[in-house]
Amino acid sequence: MSSTEDLDYPQILFQYNNGFLVSKVMFTACELGVFDLLLESEGPLSSDAIAERLGTSATGMERLLDACVGLKLLGVEIKTFYRNTQVSNLYLTKSSPKSQYHNLMYYSKTIYLCWHYLTDAVRDGRNQYERAFGVSSKDLFEALYRSEEEMIKFMYGLNAIWSICGKDVIAAFDLSPFTLIYDLGGCAGGLAQECISLYPNSTVTIYDLPKVVQMAKERFVSAEERRITFHEGDFFKDPIPEADLYILARILHDWADDKCMQLLAKVHKSCKPGGGVLLVETLLNEDKTGPLETQLFSMNMLVQAEGKERTPTEYSTLLTAAGFREIQVKKTGKLYDAILGRK
Image (tube, rainbow, N blue to C red; front, side, top):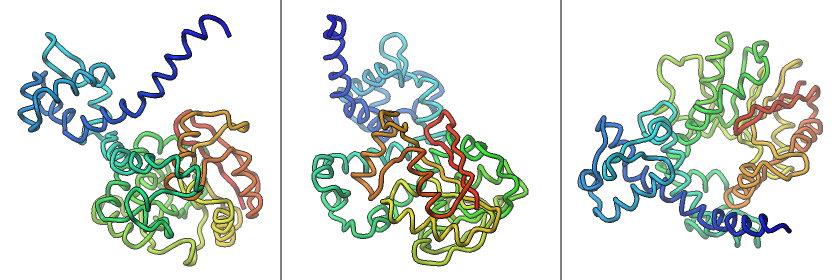
């Protein structure tokens, strides 16, 4: 090992060791409303003014703001006046169309707590909802949606992801031949909205659990989006209606291979001849050496769910076994990629 590598190696360890500290600084600033306050103020504010308006200690707020400056989430003027950066205005304020606020709160309040038990998850090979929250993990959906507040937080977070990645995965293939589309587990409708925006001659039905559908109708899908319809049910247990295309976005990664095969076989049986299935997932390299984000997401599936992230070949194998053909894979360059299989 060269002398340069010797010098760089500890720095990498320090960076990794402090990773959760970085996350919690960002989460805390979001939760306290720092970025929203600075957006509304339309100008820099002093640390004392921010602390007073948000009801925090002056000392704690000053340190938090300085850490956000170090993370390039805030800028500072005349040493004591703070302002948002462009990144914070766009992604960390609640009012932005691309806001990731709810996604970050889900990470802070749910994923962060589950990851406290990562060692146990590796030992046990199962998710950690019982240890983290005292909730039985026998039914994954019941664990994920253990309260209305948790369900809303998850739905907002998922829509936030599709505000950034949705258009890319829907545009990865020409879906115009598919006029009747079912979005299985479509949740709050963020991806469905991208779909009808790009393909106005298509109709999209969100198929999800009854309580998810009711919440989507009440809070997420506006009256103007009538080409989005809803179907209440459990697609593992209940019939899946006939359609031209089925979208499974961030669904298969929740489940082990046998459960994925069960669902894909049902989808293939219901799919019209010439129709297809669109998988939207974050893909591992074929040799599983990366990307790092996907590897971390796969660890999260261990901690939170029953499945894992997969390679393109692994997804293609599942699709082929279920009867789908002409399988195509498209890397989008964003967090999520697309795989299309035809019947």
